[in-house]
Length: 309
Image (cartoon, rainbow, N blue to C red; front, side, top):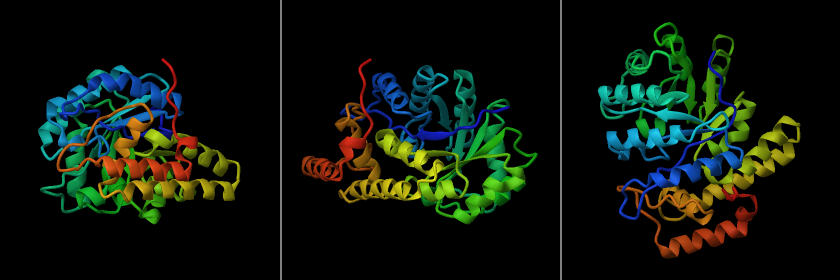
């Protein structure tokens, strides 16, 4: 029986050198940083990891290094989505070989499936490259342009994808999310993927969540989850609102949220380097403003801490 993912799953940034080549040497300290701050798993080479900006060989190497750092306290999910089916299958088979806990794939986003039936066929072909590895469909319509009811996907996938364990659900459709949680007696692991709506996600039944800001702000989200579980609803709302303000600061820097967030990691002692084109790195003035606004929010009081090895 597949052990479900609970609590926080960080979507790590892929570390680059200044010239934007891979910097795999950062990953062991990065894994320890996540583990020490209460993160239970890492979803690697996804959107936050700029997975589709990496070559196939780079993705294999990143996944392998993360898998080497995994243990029972920090399991690794490898994102294997691709526009090329055979490359996606290569990534899937490799994830099984290196001991990943699971794989996940988003829908192809150039030639797109036109229906859930076509999407199921694609996912089945990807998942079958690792017949014993749990598979999660990665629903992220904002990036793929593929937006079908996921509860219907689960119904169509029944019996077609034997390894289907659940969904990484990065979308705001809470009624559909609730339907996924309830589908077939709750047999699937439906991971919530919108950090700014985590509180609403828990109300809709989320028990595990994947997000980019869990890389650097896990403590405030763990407090939110504790407050929610204990029925301290006002406290949970205040914590969520603080997280929303943090996200808004990163969104307001004149670069993508991903580029701003990746820069935050260096402020906390885990330097993941720049982003790759077409994303643009924040300049010195933007970085100064980012630090000042996060300081005013009290971010450095609740952010992840770097412990000594």
